[in-house]
Image (tube, rainbow, N blue to C red; front, side):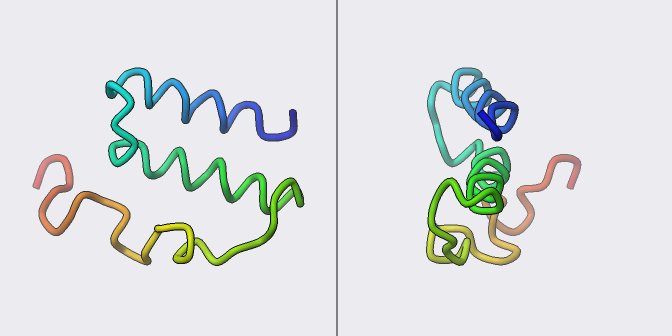
Length: 66
């Protein structure tokens, strides 16, 4: 498929994180964006899909190395 690489990265992330989807937000976001860009799903604002601008990390101060 057109977004196979994005899907595989997302699935690998899920497997490596015991299927804790909150730990795989970036790969999930990229996969959904790929599908929308290629008209494989309806275009929706990412906010409507649960992604808030600047809030894709677990929270303030949760960045690695901070």
